[in-house]
Length: 321
Image 1 (cartoon, rainbow, N blue to C red):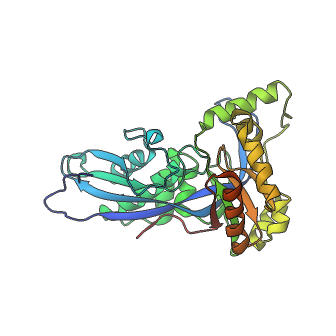
Image 2 (cartoon, rainbow, N blue to C red):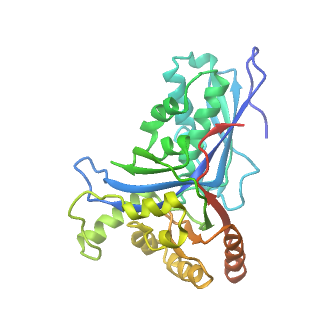
Image 3 (cartoon, one colour):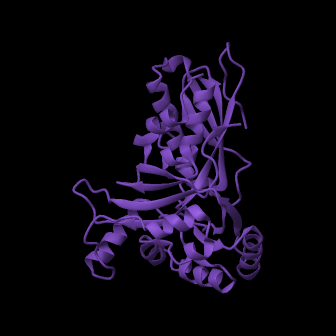
């Protein structure tokens, strides 16, 4: 892969990483007047990591490319390489915030992806978070993690969480974050799907199913289950297994019917619980401990021939390497 042109005064780069996430709970209210849905979510950053390397460009452009080292289950054709890429938007937003001269502060972003594209794990948001941190280092911004999270908020609810990492409750449209003190690791197996799902379409189907009375209509804005938060903060996997929930699971499984069968297989192979991650179609299975997560991943792969990855959380947010 050809390298982007660099400035005469700089011959360096900055690399940052940011985590994907799972939603241990995702409750969705009725759409508001502006079309957005109020949610009550519990986010957990997990050890499926995105990496972004930022290299200066002399001509002032902000460009992006997918690294050849990306995971095999990341579809290159689904990866946007234009201005619609969230990582590009993050770099542009930071450059504007710092009031830097665009002609002198171009950057090329090379992204090594582990998180599936459109997989319900906030992979694009993690790319944006890592790009933000890498560019902040490249441009000597001197901004705190909290400041970067605030700058990233307009890019989407998942981006500030990818900057902060750990575990958090998300309210509003998911952007009102309250960090949770979760010191005990939890262990999961993730089963990425070969195709992605567009989040707006999944929400749209949820609304239609509710209108058709195939799913119950919430009477008020959703709230976070306090017992689930307690199970998370104490690391009680058995208790957590009884409490995880996702209102988007039915519409996601309706759009990708194979998800239901794969969920059954994971439970048959010993998972404490299983559900769709976010808007899907990635599946997450909860295990008792690290050893059982690796064993579960092996059993799922052996039975189905589908890739399964053992991960843990919470993990730290975006950081420079």
